[in-house]
Amino acid sequence: MATRVRPSNKRCAVIGGSGFLGRHLVEKLLDRGYSVSVFDIRQSYELPGVAFHLGDLCDKQALLPAMKDVSLVFHCASPAPASDDRGLFERVNIQGTRIVIQACIEAGVQKLVLTSSASVVFEGTDIKNGREDLPYAKKPIDYYTETKIEQEKLVLEACDKEKGLLTVAIRPHGIFGPRDPQLVPILVDAARRGKMKFIIGDGTNLVDFTFVENVVHGHILAAERLRPDSPICGKPYHITNDEPVKFWDFMSDVLVGLGYAAPRYHLPYALVYGLALLLWLLALILRPLVSFKPTFTPMRVALAGTHHYYNCERAKQDLGYKPVVGLKDGIARTVQSYPHLRQGA
Ligand SMILES: NC(=O)C1=CN([C@@H]2O[C@H](COP(=O)(O)OP(=O)(O)OC[C@H]3O[C@@H](n4cnc5c(N)ncnc54)[C@H](OP(=O)(O)O)[C@@H]3O)[C@@H](O)[C@H]2O)C=CC1
Ligand SMILES: CC(C)CCC[C@@H](C)[C@H]1CC[C@H]2C3=C(CC[C@]12C)[C@@]1(C)CCC(=O)C[C@@H]1CC3
Image 1 (cartoon, protein in one colour):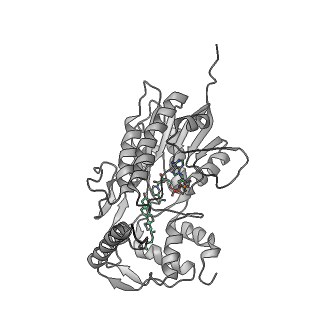
Image 2 (spheres, protein in one colour):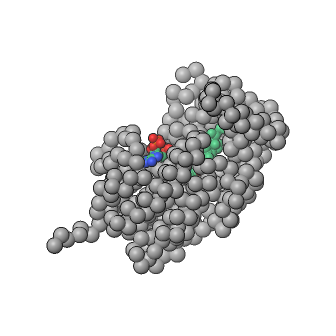
Image 3 (cartoon, protein in one colour):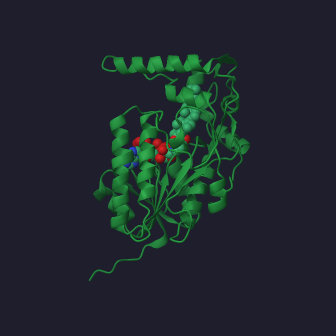
């Protein structure tokens, strides 16, 4: 009879490990003595001690080899939020997550840590110091958020001590840091096209931006504290820098750090949101004829003009979480890591 090897608790798999957050997580896990399998649709780097498994997470047969003898799985894969492809989000974030859960059960994985998002409660209106018990958004601002909600519910409901699978969800917000493919590159692209002269609204709205190493720290704490007797089973946790900042101050610090001018002129929020909605509709209607992607989408305008910051007391209490890199330091390290995006480069 074949004997089943008991998975070592230092063997883990990172689904989405080629992405921005995934790669930072892999690097920290290696530092901490874990051996890591990466499962992703693409391979973006090579590292000693990391075994890559390429495939689509909707394919259970492709996933299973990455989970062999693994006790802990991190699921941080998702299509990019900027995509407008509802079918893709539903397939990957909802059906794919069901498959990830089935594969974990089949492979005998004991712990599943999901990267969710604090945006699962965001409907485009102010959230100040929001706690985890806020209800899920009834009118999510886009397909990305809609499917992140379903994904989180699936993972948290799958937590079953009897079946031997424990789950927890990390809800980061506005992740930034070296190698981020969206926040800084989109901002710089807008600045280079002369679109970052304006502040949407009065510029006083507070937002969480979270340095990637803090997000990684939250994931690893959650994984290591996830045991049958711990209070964290089946729960979501906000992980932020715990330093809400004015959205436009953060944007200005990054832009000025890279040699661009800070936005100065104010535009009314309702006007810009209305225009963004019109443009979005126009792009949708004209899609069969011409393809254009507006920089100021309704989702980005809502994020740029409202308060959305979250309380991370629950993570402090249950996980012993405390940010390891402050906001100022995080911005400096981020700016330094993008020499090719500097003004004039
Ligand atoms: N960035 C942020 O500000 C925030 C992110 N999050 C969450 O954090 C997680 C990581 O985000 P981030 O690192 O920024 O994103 P990235 O796009 O950098 O990383 C996601 C990775 O998953 C891969 N992937 C996508 N679809 C599949 C699939 N079907 N099968 C296998 N791999 C796939 C992507 O490949 P490819 O690039 O080819 O699509 C990419 O390598 C996501 O779950 C996201 O929802 C939550 C809050 C904030
Ligand atoms: C053109 C400008 C008005 C805005 C440029 C910056 C934006 C690209 C980013 C500002 C806030 C960011 C953010 C996300 C993506 C990038 C921003 C819109 C997320 C939507 C990423 C995925 C999430 O789960 C939530 C994030 C909220 C903040």
